[in-house]
Amino acid sequence: MGFGVGDQACSLESYNVPLFLIATTFLALFIPTPVAMRVLAYRNIPEQYEIKCVIISKSNCLRLMEFIDDSFQLNAQGNEINLTIDPSYGGGFYVAKGSYSIVRNCNDWTAKALRLAGVNTPIWSTLSSSIMYHINRGCNC
Image (cartoon, rainbow, N blue to C red):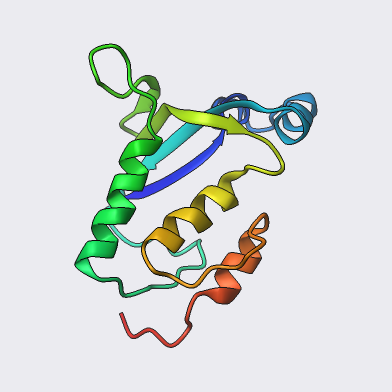
């Protein structure tokens, strides 16, 4: 499974429209906006992504799962709030807690999740390249 967060409008526009609006991107970066949680199910490891593995303890794995679970906004019945689910896409988008901006973006969320799992992450994690740089390349997963 894959999890990640992003601006709700950008997430839904990029899913529905090949070229999402520049204005939406500008708002997402400079004005705090609602967050969406992207959930994907994979049958195989995707080859188009740079993938690194990490080995974490059972307790750190549980902390990571709790962090992901706590990132979902729940409705009054205690269920995740669906924005869109598409079986052909392999997942969907859900309402997430918090707001999205240039100082609280998807990479910051990812770094916090990895940090809770005991993975070495950078102090400044706004760029995905800084996170990937810090992950140990010597893992034989």
